[in-house]
Length: 465
Image (cartoon, rainbow, N blue to C red; front, top):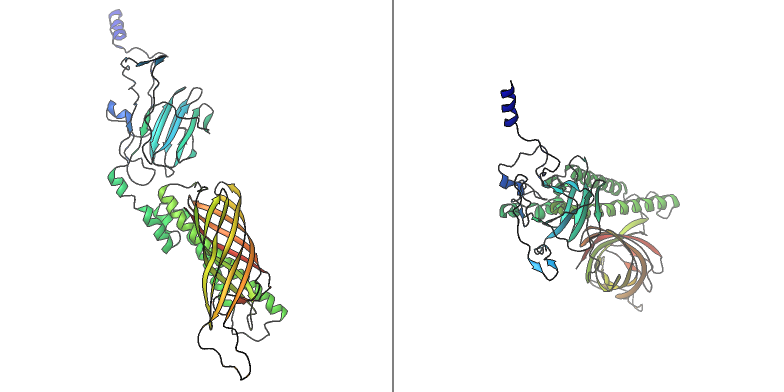
């Protein structure tokens, strides 16, 4: 018996003590284990923040395997001691996500917003790991947490890992540490076809680009919203019969109903314009994996395309009509938040006339909060209307009507801009204006008489360079 006990004791492996080294990082629970020790410094092949597969990561300073003791090496001596460890600079177009251990540190998992695994890392006390790859949004979470921290990484973002959880902290400069670069293979880059295709499909069918990006609920929401607004606007337009002249157009009850109907049509069509433009931009944002835009505040030039809509009186029935004015504008930012330019450029055609318009604008941005800008603006539209076609016949002795008139339309407006991408926004613009000198003409037979104070609502988009 004594001999058997001695044999068993000698054959048993020694128990791991408290000083046994731990595994520096590894795959997620449930993921297949690496095939060899050499695979511990790699992450699974399918790791793209987009939809393509990734090549294996390359670590500039890989951690030593747990089963092998690191070989001693001599540190180069400087004037006052060992030379500091300096991380290599990022490559052009790379962003840096810095993970640093606070307190006891902890283990973190980094994924793309769609759940693609980028890596699982154990960050020790005082340790720093730099992840470098394409700019965009990443999700950082603890292994046992059901939800993670969405971290936008544009240039450099610092996340602290500790017993209390994860926290984004202010970056105080470069820190030494192992660098992990996540680069896509050529096949993955060629396979990122969603960037151009998703916005084109959303332009054809609202929400289709989001569905191609595998955001099915988001795409269905945009599609249902566009269908609802379109159906409401179409139904309201069909209920307004211009041939119904049973009651005079100036009658109080009929006029009020016409104003409400025209205003409702303007709101529905304006909302449809905004939703359509927003979902096209959103499809591209989903394709590149960037849901948190960084507005381009230091732009030099901005272009805008807008529809200014108002309700005006007209002869006959209906007594009120929706007047829409599509125009373009160019603004230059000459000082921080202050822009000047030429806007409301457009050409209108009506029965027997044509109108050309445009004018200066001064604009100051009073609020910048995240993706929202609010500006105050003042300007004037100069519109010249010219008769077209043969002049009308007039009785002998009477003067012929004027063939050209010029009107000045001063205005003041609020300018609310919501950014969907860094350089693209949708705009909502309430404006108060009044024509002076002559009537203001719209396309068709629409016109606002001179000195008539008018409330307009504009919807459009802006591009910034």
